[in-house]
Length: 482
Image (cartoon, rainbow, N blue to C red; front, side, top):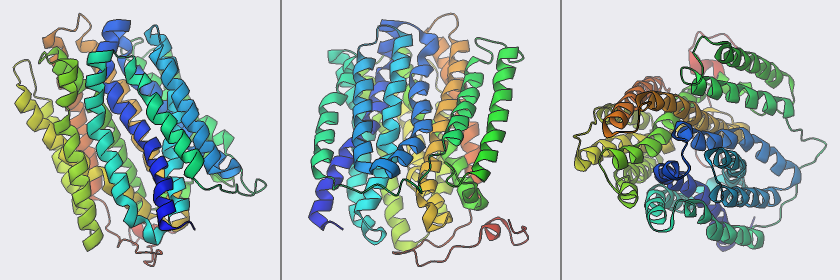
């Protein structure tokens, strides 16, 4: 194991790559209204984000398996290269169709940045010592959540929206060089024992894509009762059934079903799904509301997102410290659910007369809820499974968060397109925003119900000394043995 100083230097490169991915989502979200005005295609607005998040979700487990086969360091560097290539192509897009296609490339690279970063950290730092390095991760989160909207607004306002993508190059090249020099070489696993679940990956991609397309096209491009939408829904159900069958059969499934035998993992997945819906919906449509209804500039709309993002960082760190000291954590997702329901319900009341100050207060309430969920949900998922499934728990909850973002944005896009079918006037945008956050409040209520149902299991200390309850005990004492 490398010494402490070497670990910190190596982790700095990994943190830079993580920051690259986190900044991109917030920068592009702030720039979207300007992109639409330049390229047109407002009806496809949500797909610029969906294309990115969807490919990120389905590619994450693939990158992880490739890292096991060919060395995490090497594959991580390749993922940075793919992400930068997608950034350059996205910045050069000439129409909305090209931009969506190039965002697919960028999302493929982002899947490696997110999927391999924590695997690299795990290989550098033993579980007993990871708490010493949480400050670095928190700093990255702060820079990504607060700095993204600021950078997005400033860059778009002064240099143009294309630089929202080109700005990835300097940071990405530094991260690439740093990781290449500082990350220790790692030996790949025995290739004879490692098998990529290609069938599972293909079926997962089919299922997620069918669901997103059905929710995006239903009621907009095709009627809900049309054969196109019905066919997509049938394909989603068939794909899910086949995926579950494959996961039961293969030796190394991409998403082992045994983790769902633990009650808390399933509940954490529900909460992450809701968090993805709310977080990505807010980051995409709040700037649009601010610019169209409140007549703020692109730069100002980036600054005005700070009330949403700052509480996420502050609250998650406070909650994490309290949890570490007391070992108690259920109260935090419950509080998160309460604040998230209240915040999204308040955001749904915004109209043409809502002031920037009032909107900021509503965003603070929503941000507090997001902050309580962000860190705690992953901890609940990891603590509910056996140590050998920690990686699966992390990637699984991230998958549900990304899936929630993809499906949520598709449904939000449908609602927004209906409201603005006759033009993007202030009143029509306000109407679309009302419908979006009303739905977000309902989804947040489901997350609150899931949080209330969480069974608080004592947190495992260093080395995992705490014994986990058996999966059947997590459901109820009378549950049958699986």
